[in-house]
Length: 596
Image 1 (tube, helix red, strand yellow):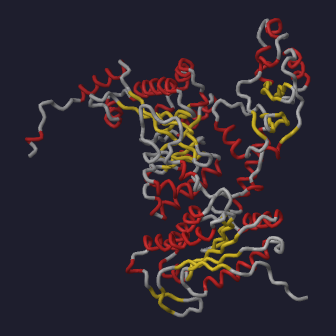
Image 2: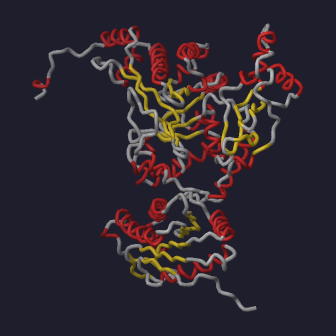
Image 3: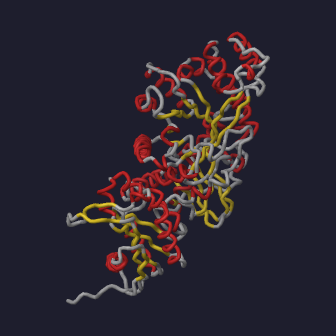
């Protein structure tokens, strides 16, 4: 059998492979392919990882053979230089958006040649800025010289490059390198991503990595995502950046926009705030001195020199904003010899910064923050202009924007459930009180799993958490996120505030979906079991069921969330009375008036 499989062509020798590698490098026959990395919170493409292939008819076509030959031939550094050059050139030719992630080995990372402007020369030649490049440190071999690695990282970051740590959790140094390197991005190894929707242990590891990354100010990227279920689970866990074959495979000409099949999954991310709780740009609006577009540039130079605190001024024509003039940019122009003679009389509109940001007053702060901080060319020292229906209203300070976003993240973290990441009691109460004050009609639904405690005692907390997470995902899918709100009030208890008119149908669909998912989680031969009730008595239990108690409050009669909670408690108990899956709609619409 083996004889029939033989080939007339001899296998290449190490010398043959060495010559082939030299030919590929010298003739620039390396082919870069690009795989998108997407942002999930405000769905869009963050950037692309450049991966390398050799010529298709070459024994070094695949990267494993290519880089193995380079190591054996002691040409790793030469190959990395060549890969970097062709990747930058092709990335610029394709006019791809966002950042370019370039792989780099630890030993090459600390090579002084890499820190002496070679990459910057390539970027200048192809028209890319350093801020668009992320050096992705691949941990393929042990590296004991962490001080040298850290010094190299600091050097690159000072030059404007970003640093990413690849395969987090799978390398030699792992947490030590992470703590000492201070990267801008960490990429969670695909070992922890594969099958994460079915593996609670992997979810715990990823949660821990996300928590550390957020505390250190790193952006975490989940890589190796291959199924919709993996991506949905990661979205529910709060992962903000993702990469993998399910999103898009590496391609010679990758998509320049978010793939259509990914966007619906991004929309299932739990919304932690609604309407009035979404903070808008108008909250941080301040007045600022404006300058007319025809004012001579020399006058604005005097203005900047008379007030060292003034970083920029808005140029406004009547009530129409044209853009910002940056102090640093303008004074840099006038610092050159003969600049005053050349530019003093020119109108200031000629010096408007090309990176000026003009936003509407009702723009969400979170969305604006992502745009400002993730645009590699954006100058964060320049304030942004705020307008209303195109008319100038004032400016927003970037420092105020970032402070508000930080405060909001801390608030969300304090008041969200650590298991499901859904809002807890405080945001739920605030939302209900808001609707009552505004006298906006709504339906409140209390969702509770019947006999969950005996189930948890018998099967253990791991499977119990699986059921709760499955329930949270079903709820997120069941609501209209444009107007409905979910609160996880503890354990297996959830409250949904519906404003969608088809709320009853959504509840019935949720109940049916819960039964289906439960049958997938628990085998049929284990769905009947003995466990203890709340009084400690052993009794037999069957499959879990879902009770949903609904209230349609009379908003004119109910004043606070306490009264809604009273109505919900009655509806919940009525729904649980039959101990089967059912939706109970209470006829009581106003709270009881207690005597006295």
